[in-house]
Image (cartoon, rainbow, N blue to C red; front, top):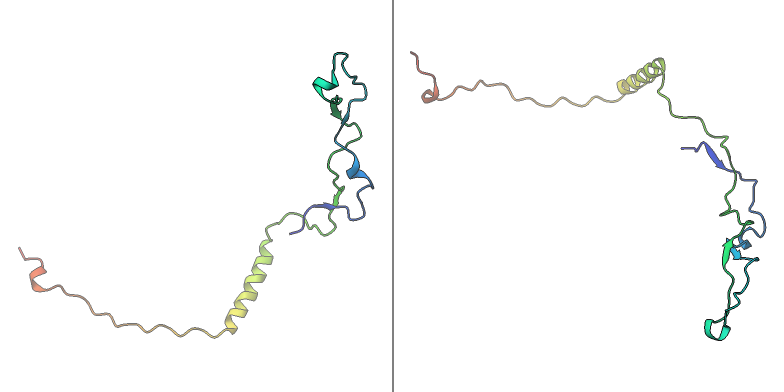
Amino acid sequence: MDAKKIEDPEEAKPEGYDDIPAQIEDPEAEMPDDWDEEDDGEWEPPMISNPDFKGEWKPTMIDNPDYKGPWEVRRRDETRRDETRRASQHAQRPQPRPHRTVPFTPFTPPPSRLPRPS
């Protein structure tokens, strides 16, 4: 089944798009005055969200030229046409042989089971 929207086949991912990090070091952050690299280790500035990062790249979705719309019930006259065609095809097929039937024999219960006359 065709989808209503498809990815634009003419659109390509911009070059270097994947090289933009989601987070960057805060450029306004400064090392605290009481930071001692011997005791505290190397100071690293806090990370903030990158304003240039736009998330995972996804191509633009466009209308699918092959999409025919949602499924619809066929009109009554179209159904009759199909039934007529099926009936003519059915008439051309060989008919199955009828099953053999066993003749009917009525069952009479034994005399001990017959109702007693009153």
